[in-house]
Image (cartoon, rainbow, N blue to C red; front, side, top):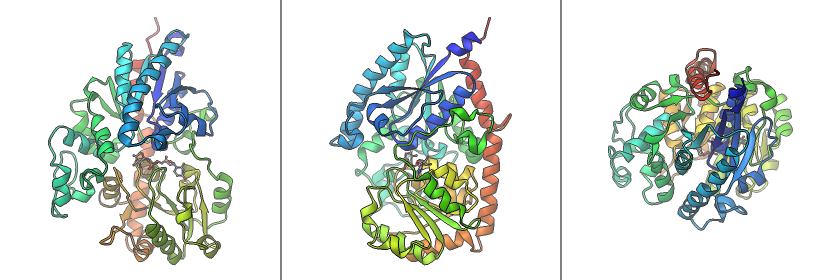
Length: 461
Ligand code: UDX
């Protein structure tokens, strides 16, 4: 027992909400096994968090932009390059401090967006586990490109849009089913480089974890796990939704934005079951003014109740007087307790950008989706939502890349009441049950997690 208490895992997410959430949940699961876990966040992020730390320790590193974070950098390239240097130095300091405490670090679990953390851990002779926050399908696509098995983004951008692309472990994809970097060449250069860089030292990782469950992506998981220590450990949802075995006293939230929780939940409590459309585009995506207007009037025309998360930075793009126009049917908030909202019986469907966390949260809670991808991995996730998992419909865009209000209204109706809605709901329940099984006793993700814990914990004499 003494040995067990001395085992200590550092968890180092990339400083973004979509990365902190799943890795925080992973830390909680470690703590629930009686093992010490410390979450390492950047100084800038720590300032905006509304967190109680519970049993999980928190340590700080620097990305080199303590006062402004990512937005203070002149470019994505500049941010990532400074983060690599300053992040490595400050993570080294954090580990040194722990090594001279009563709890030396036994293992560093690092976000694959910051592969330099592996080098820091190995520099101390400490085990390093890679943690992928995106789907296995998406990871495989980047991996295939990294290994030279896919064409250039320029060729996919110019290709016939119906061109079938064949990738091991995946169904045939069209160019626009690939992550957006493959058909918007040049524009997202630094991000694309970062995603490819995930594989720069991956072969040296002692563990590779993916926030997915095997049943959801069985072929690609088996393909990728063939020659690597890749393990599925998802979905990393908090205990209160899926896994009652984790004590609640470690259940806390690390939100960059403060959610309007009671406003949302009180409003939902008054709505009939399966009647509300929840609309959220995650923490990063920014819709343009025209798209905001089309979405606003698409929601209004659907005549459904809707709860729409419009972050403070986007609020000015709402059509003027829209809030007043729809006050009977719609509630617009700056940030929501998304998991609580998705788990609420009033929820009918989720209009989502298909960030991986939002997608896997909706799948695990059995919520049908209208997939409205914006960029990065979201396009691939949307393809799977509609064509592989059958839990939603993907919107069509017009020749200017805009989703028109009629299309939004049509997709919401298809998911809520159209011919396909019965099948969609049935599939949503199927994936929800499989998520629970994966995390339940003897389930695929639970077994992988237990294997990690057992190898981590020194065997008592
Ligand atoms: C980004 C990318 O978009 C995503 O594709 C990638 O896989 C991770 O980084 P983000 O855009 O923020 O993430 O989307 P998403 O992955 O869905 O993560 C958002 C998180 O914030 C989710 O866990 C969601 O539950 C939470 N959230 C969102 C809230 O708690 N409240 C909200 O109102 C909106």
